[in-house]
Image (cartoon, rainbow, N blue to C red; front, side, top):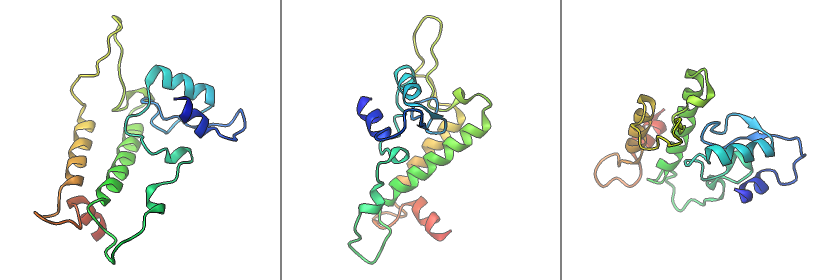
Length: 155
């Protein structure tokens, strides 16, 4: 956590803010270093946020070299997954008046236990199904496109 905070706020003014990557804020709510630290302690880091692209880390796309004339490979499913993740977060944030009601939230009951093993809500189920489809080959043996990357390419 300290590595992340140092990376995200490296050279920043003490009062500056960055998108908070906790499970509750999902990189949508800007917060100070102290607020992000507190949120990460209480809510934990969003487990889907592995490349710190909103906090200064370079995306993999810019550093990748193309080996062939075909720019689309099966690995493009990862980019589509990121796109779906961003889309579902935006939908979640717009559809819920309380920012704490996101798909990745952990609710703690009065006894102190959390509900990590509860059934995903309807939005989460749709998202997980889209992620599954994003990783499937367009047809058996196809290494160039997934079902979803092909549709995105057509669009």
